[in-house]
Length: 482
Image (cartoon, rainbow, N blue to C red; front, side):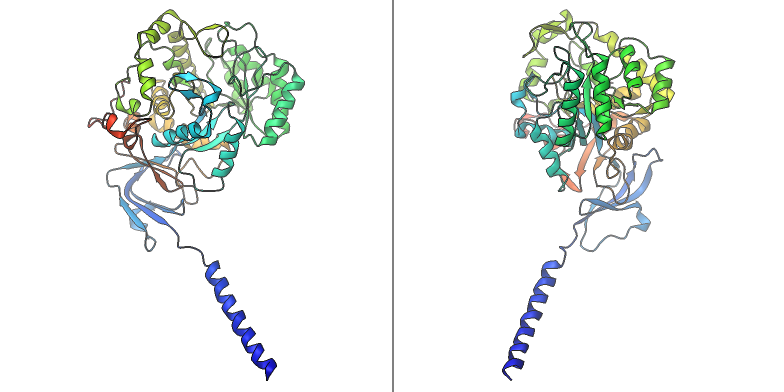
């Protein structure tokens, strides 16, 4: 009897424990949001689909299709977006984060707080992923790792860690990137970045239009590219000259982070790039535009001013900056010489636009990137300007959107972002007006989602000051000058 009684008691305890285990094992109720009555531009180039619905569950797209086929999950939140347009979140394939305060660039500003501020600004403009090319401190890679374990509420990070700069040459961020002098040192640096988990390897080959006495030798660029490939990583290069672009293609470069700007691209380069599948990752047309304008025409446009600090606006409007643009030479912190940054940059811009058009017509693989983050280039804002310049250079709005979404995801090797399809992350940009009719309509941001999380838009934020200090959203959007 004693044994039976204890057995019964033990059974009760086991049953109770089992019930507790089941209770703990039961998954939390799924979180779902349904966007209804939208026109979907899915990012692949397929025609827009009006009368559509999107179901987001636990940050992923669970359904996208006609309203007639919608079966909303029980308890889902519904957002009626009648008359709105939804495209994938923009991906900017060339940025630098956390390196600025107002218009002063310095490694001391690259702090977790400043990096996060930039990532939030990107997302406010509908840029839901960014590729940082070569100026990241190690903590940025750690932030990226944390993002990939969660549902982020700011722009997703892809990082090239610390890129390869030739000693005495152009590129990098003083105090972060460590210049190399030999192929052996270059290979060692690539190995170190690969061990840290860099997504890509970046190198700089330039002499700032012959204002710097040295430029990376081909022996070093080849060592970088070969070592990156040994580690299973793509190599991407800052480039300016046509001759260097050809040599880098011969060496096996995977993509270019800037357009060739010294002369027209020729058939030889285009044929080489097509044969080897070399990408024009980021043409950075908006970078060339920024350096060619004595007075930026958007200085009073709230789509721009809401995303920059008061100090930035003050400097951009100053007579000193206008003088620097007109006269050419200016001094930058950390550099022992004056740079001829702006002189003759209008010619450089026109060459970049012409070469962009030639590459697009030749069928080169085209991404979208801005080189925003350093002095004079503005996180988030420049992505919209870049797409407008691409259209100015001959692309259709649809082609510009595809480059900035699914093509960039293809370059990144990430199949979970870049288009609107079931199973992908719900990284979405909701617009009030049709960007296929006018690419400037990407300004008409209604809402932004990252992993299904609704995040503040540029029309709901004001950088480094109260909302009341910013100009309100104009009624006549878009009002960008081109």
